[in-house]
Length: 312
Image 1 (cartoon, rainbow, N blue to C red):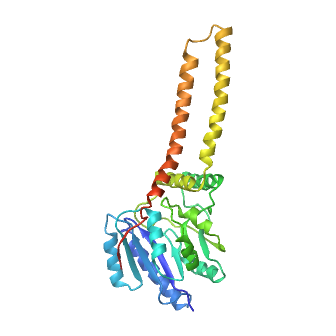
Image 2 (tube, helix red, strand yellow):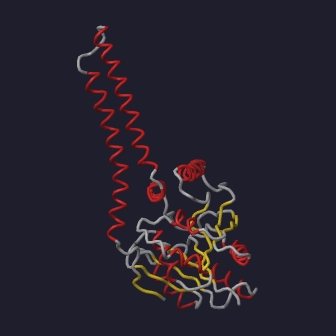
Image 3 (cartoon, rainbow, N blue to C red):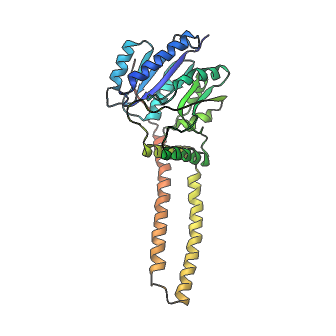
């Protein structure tokens, strides 16, 4: 039997690019159906993540024009990762491929993904060949982003975002993860199963504005670290020991200066330096601990990760 394919595209304020994205994906699915690579039941699912523009209106119009196009409307903006999860856990299909709405992911590698699935891969990662289209700053920070995550013990595929194929078996197991602080790039490698990679050149954004500026990328990296690694907490312990040792050396130095020279400024060494240094260290440590406590707080409330308002 041929594979029933579902494409999941999270969409937030994507009215500028949505018609072109839908047009290209419909043509691709028709070609794959004609080539007997997928079944005629294959569909495209746009997930509207509480957009404030005409995104949902366009999805309704596209659905009325193309039977292949379906829509999932979330009750509010739940964030990209939760919108993606809503699609992955809701849509039917033997395999599901997730991709962004901005046409930066090369849809022409989808046949290669399907071929890898037929060869036994339960998960197929879309991986960028290079970062030639990025600025030097973007390319440098992206490399460091993956290096930092891997250093902290997060199992992640370098140069892979959320362009991937997942089998129904993998999706069922993904549904057993109930984390509120969601970082799918770190969760999915934990599933195990046989995986494969397909490589592609990432295109410039077709239209609209990026939804992941630098500050959001930093927040995503922090979420990845604190969701999958306790290394920062261990660092605080080691840092506390080192600072205590340094404080003893500083105290000995201040005592020597006081007893054997006339260069000491009364009270400066013993008060100002330790206060500023240890105060800054304590604030940093409390910030890291607070990040973990905030995640624990979110997890214990067991609030739903997404709420679906309407489907087409």
